[in-house]
Length: 324
Image (cartoon, rainbow, N blue to C red; front, side, top):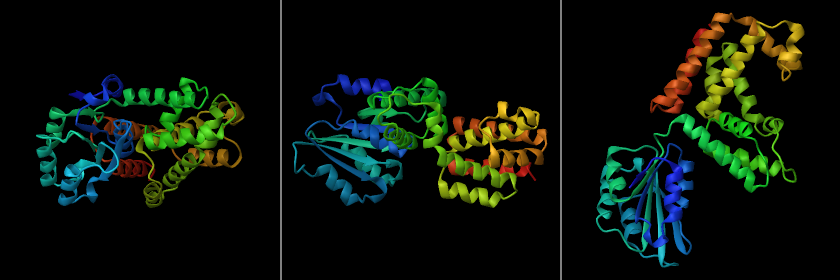
């Protein structure tokens, strides 16, 4: 049985009697943080929980965890994370296990993409594959999850605020979970999330990304690349933030100085002067080309399985070439 939508998979978990859950599950999502979160949902009351990372396993260890008895409970739920990192002969051991799975253990395997070698796990067990989820569907789902998290924390949040958090975090669930938790703690005692709260909680990543953009505008491509390596920003966050920066600089060229306060109330003092300097340094055609590059990279990210690190480097190199 295979699921491609999280709500349908969760319905399966809630409706199935624990005794009737599959002995083997495969969870596929590009983010390891999500793999672990979803794997944990399969743990039932009274079951022993064990998690192993694929790169740390040996053949003898796999044999031991597949065949040893539980020590502290009648049943166990055992998870192996990122099985795409296992050698093929290790995968064959797991595939062989499918022929006669242990009745007292549920085996949960996770991966970042659905490879051909994993087809047998989806066929003989239950698989959830989120690797092909459309970006706009994922953003909508994450926004709804954020709203539910705030609700559990007794905080009201509009859909627009939840959507903004998704965009600022680049749809990266680990970062979203971190920032929502920080917001919930910060707003303890209040009952609503305001738009200005996002500036307070998410200020550090945005300030760092501004430094990346500033380095590009000042012809320090190497410095911009080094900053992305140090900070490890999600590509989506970088695209959204740099696009906002470029659009703002482009719009400044078309607005009278007397209208700055009305049109750009967030730009004041040093930030306004710095943005003005960057804006005056380049032509409208250069800003348009930069926006086109940002769109092209975003399209690549959403349509092709290309490593984020490569796309980030490609993005900065292309933007840097426009500013020469």
